[in-house]
Length: 347
Image (tube, rainbow, N blue to C red):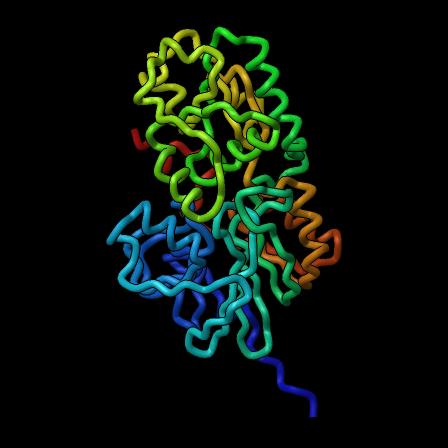
């Protein structure tokens, strides 16, 4: 006799007030309010929040949560490496690399013969600071869609780094204040600059230091970094100073002599965003998949069912249906855009 099919994933993986909930395992994936049990895909604050009971995550994600939240990070934590299976009740949970930031993972859930992959945030291009995305065949693929519109096609990283270095050469009398997310984007930028031949010190806003130190401790070499707090800001002509995006517009930036303001973000594709922030040098550099990467990933994973969340859902749902996938939007609240200021506003 043929095997009896298991319950439909829609019956055991649901959107509740606290986020995406796995009923048979009684846990949430990236809950946006404290939960008794949480599977956390990566360390950004809109996915890894403090106050959970038991947390399952990769070593890198746990290290980030511990650095950010201290004793408030969790009551108990369990580390799982990529490919390692942990059973939570009747559900087998494992992690696959997501290529987003250090320790980032896709959550792979298996229950009664069905496999669901929750992508978390991801990108497909090379990143020297984290493990590359690994497509996992599954029955249901839950994908983010932060840049889920055809207008979002990110240029090669090397082109954007070349723009930054060209500006440094063209304006040797001006310090470059470079706004970037403190977790992931900043460290990736530093590594890309090192690969481009920059070996001089890079200056850091105070909000960047702890996570750069953490990346170094996790085996990601960043080269010479200098806290800007101890430097004479009037004498930083021609130097690159990494800071949170929010710092570009606050009084901290006024201590520099005629700074050139730059920002690294996928949103710099939208010129109005750059103008609103008074960014002179917009750099299109994202830790999220662009439209081509999102659509290619659907084909690479090959899941017959696609649930789309966290972003511009309608366009990707329409594309997926046109390609023959059974697709729907899975709206989750509590997710922020890539460069929301709130997370990185520490002094």
